[in-house]
Length: 158
Image 1: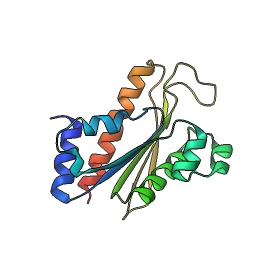
Image 2: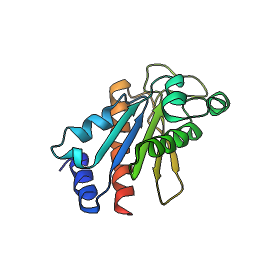
Image 3: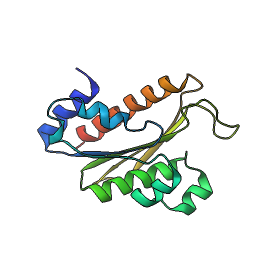
């Protein structure tokens, strides 16, 4: 069973809906979920906010937060998840922002990905994973799978 199929089963049993706010994965989490037949029962929407302007406009991320911490940061991941949850009416939102590569800097290295998970009942949680310079495709695939695991864990707690 795939991660997306597991998510569908859990969310269907609990009558939950999920939404995604993605940057470096460009909609890969939404695509993984909607690849599964019956996903329309649990998937409310996916928002791809690749640019800083779209994060502000579509999710309500504060431009001050982006200036202070950079787009690849836990504060931005938190605001992305919160904004997606607020705007969607879903029960659970996941956000992803990172540097898939190639490139990066001394302060924001290639392979750094920040995640947020928001629900109506709990304080939004964030985390950063340093995948390292594995290559763009691999970092994005690992980030997609981690986001799905975070959605599953949040759904299981409900």
